[in-house]
Amino acid sequence: MGRVKGNRTGWIARVSTGQILFEMDGVSLSYVR
Image (cartoon, rainbow, N blue to C red):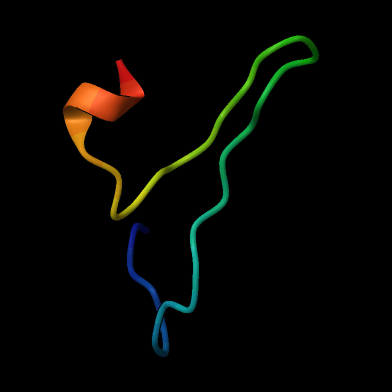
């Protein structure tokens, strides 16, 4: 149990209704705040 056969191609996350989930790349931390 816990072993993966083959290469991983992505990630899956459960997000409940009303939650916002995102990732930002290439944006300075001072701009985001």
